[in-house]
Image 1 (cartoon, helix red, strand yellow):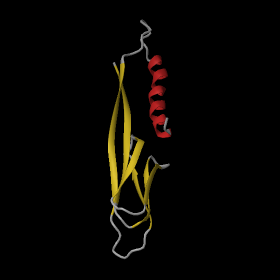
Image 2: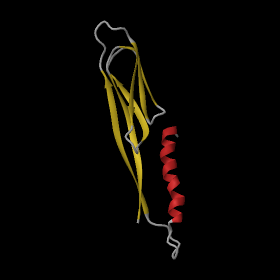
Image 3: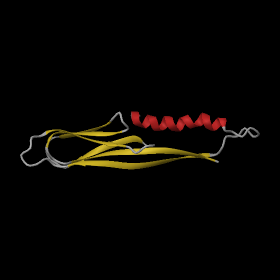
Image 4: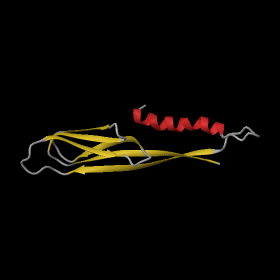
Length: 119
């Protein structure tokens, strides 16, 4: 399991003891609950370097909105040369690295939050 998905599952599992504590004291039945996952995609783009510019490392970083956790990400590289990689960062987002290219790219982060509703 990917490390960032572990956080989502741990959040869901952390609700179980709380729900058990909220059980009706007469019937000993836990409340009826439902979990809803809401996700959003955030992105940021780089512009191509000016003609004749040297190819260097370019970093693009995107962050999840408050209350959301990063669950994945990616990069669209709009050129034929160089290399593009992406990885989760330590600040609840995704970092994309372009290497040896002056082409444009878009970095994406998939961000999700879980809401638990009980009756």
